[in-house]
Image 1 (cartoon, rainbow, N blue to C red):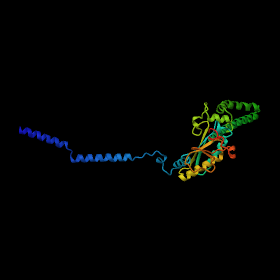
Image 2: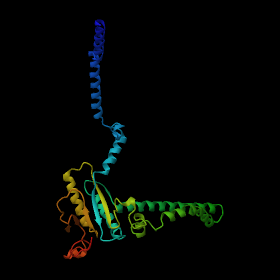
Image 3: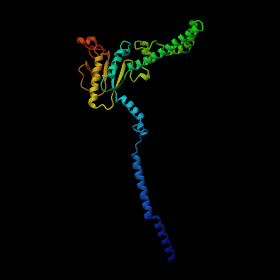
Image 4: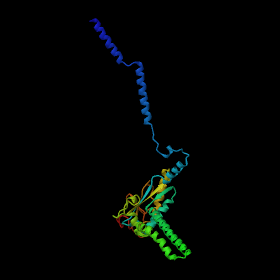
Length: 300
């Protein structure tokens, strides 16, 4: 009986001793916990770099060109919103060239990196189309002259040879020109070209134009200041943009977003939170602006 009791007590003591961690195992657990804590702290501080500078050294010419390109886009844009009383308003062929002139003047202001506007964009599209037409016309004339010269040397009819040479050219490129230019010559003086390029079939701006043509009465001009321009410089630039828009005297109400400076001297009137810069001829004689909201003005 006593022997059995001693055996039982000895077994329980051995099991209790086995369940208690030894000094070495405790040290192992402490080391593991410390490693886990250090790993978690290191992962939390990991910063993923996906820029060009993380793949190439800073002295690489590709990085320098990339930096110059990014700098050319400038900072956050100052938006000039122009709203006419009715369509086509500023997209009229007699007014759009003046919008083009305004965009050019804004691009020449100090501390301006770039200007994006509907008139400049459409004018570039027209220039590219005209260049394509000139290239095709020059190539056609070259083929015609070469065929006539060759036929004359051979004693053949030069006119017939020239006609035969351009017939194949016309068959190949004629339908392409007709399909690509269904509204006549691509110029800012061609109202059909303007409307067909910017407006969709429903009379609303095409999706790719909405960032500068929000609707059929409004235009937006984005003026990007140079990178790193401080607060004071931005305020001066906004004031210069205000004055430039005012001098343009476009038949529209203008709103200039950005840092709100003191009202420029050339501002004609305030209309709530929106500034009306345009002046009609009648306003010079003391009457209200004919296209601005308010007494004596249009509905804006």
